[in-house]
Image 1: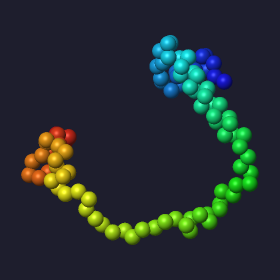
Image 2 (image 1 turned 60 degrees about the horizontal axis):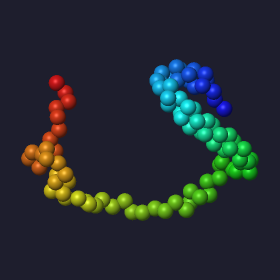
Image 3 (image 1 turned 30 degrees about the horizontal axis):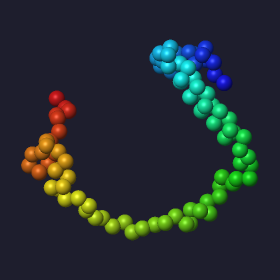
Image 4 (image 1 turned 90 degrees about the vertical axis):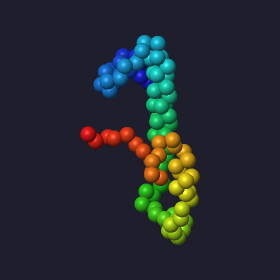
Length: 94
């Protein structure tokens, strides 16, 4: 469990600014995350083979066929900034 002093050190290292009235709430949420990680570390995964790729053969595949869902008019109807059937955007290079 983290204490307020630990939280202050972490915030200083991460260059985070947390108000005094938010510290208790943030500390509670952070401790919940650490409790969850502790629960995960207790799970026995010794029988799990990480190199078992038998499920890779059952990956569904589909044909790679190009298709057009939207027309130019439908796409351009979402903006008021258009000119010559194209989107107009602000200049970003000077």
